[in-house]
Length: 608
Image (tube, rainbow, N blue to C red):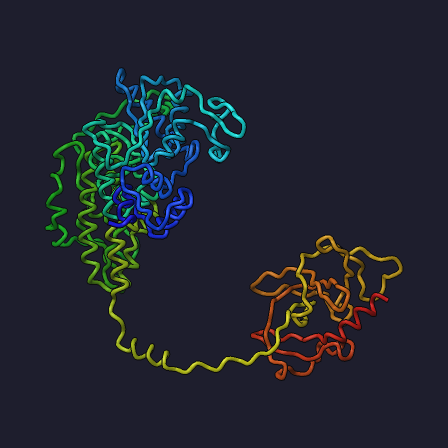
């Protein structure tokens, strides 16, 4: 087994050959080893090599919302289970920033170390040594530490040393995730595992998720990274609530609720008599049907498994099938019938409460979610045989998914629509749709068409606009395109094209108006349609001098053929003779090219 495979087996990381080679070169330079460098697992040199391939990167109070959730969870745990210690696992703990952050919040909240214990594991021995030392530089406080540094750290030169109060909560151990045995350590109420699974391949992610599930208590809470939640949800976890993106629980288990402030009691002018709980659902008001549509029951819907599994009306106080369940909406004025996934929760799920109301009615919400999942699967299978335009009508991700009102019950399982089989089925159907009969022949003719020969260009010019006129100068003259700046007038030089002097990058340059020099009208010039135009200072180098020319817009570099230039147009004929050498076209712009020698003579004449 080569060194790369041994490192993968020891760390579980999906290491690339380049990363291993970089770490090996660094260790060979540090130890002076030769070409026979081949450390074996269990040796100090192999552990030093492992420290180079892992990524122990974190900082104090990284993602404050995660730690706020963790603190509320611990407080709820202590209130609901007094006298029992809350066990927290941080894996990987890197340099100790994560467990120390939670420990400082616990100390700030008045929770004693005997009430909450944090076990911190990491694969890197160097990271564990740094965590036990508790010495951090300013880089560890790159986020908002909320005053924790001033309260729990002491300065020692350029470093900050953590105090004894947070240390009492944490115990650091060097170990791999796959080496942590739940039979030895026991289960944990709260598990931090962030930014670890992103370095694993798919098979290793499944193993890691299974080990985390064994380490987490049945009613515990797992705090994962934002990018790892979908992989964990596919491996047996689920979001604690439909809106959680990092707080997960075991699928089918209910994590302890986070402590929240009780809502304010409603203000009532009169004494409201509580309504007695009904033994069955009250009669539902009919929903108005849009004009041009009619409701029709279908036998298939009445005999569907979804309809057969509905509880009988009035069987319990928590269940009543929707009176409109099993109906299909059909348009009467033209167009075929179409069924859309956004109506599944209303038509097929058929409950009075929405599927997201599981917090208030768990039985109704669970039944609605199960029935909506079954109906969504049947709808997806049926839609695979319909035309492509039907998927545009389905588009449940735009109606009840992440791009809509987020009322889809599948979001509790898949977190995002991209992980849903309905969304994947739409993409697969779209990519595998049959092509038209003449599709291949049309593209064959298009690709067989010879390409037109490229236009011959042998010169480059910088195009710009003054007033309504497009002009250009040779690229060899252009030095800089600077933002506009005010020109300071010179005494007794108020006439002519010389505007004064202007500061360009700390250098004073003469500013010359091309509009006056070329007799170009700049009054009542409308803005260019469909784009933004910005005034600029065009700095040109002509001989020993540099000039700053104010222009209304700079188009950019345009290539042209010198032998294809035409004589100057009539609209630039008012310029001094010979100043415009010719006109060339590039796309939709026709620019007049200024003669270099004649332009230099005109600019030098303005300085005399």
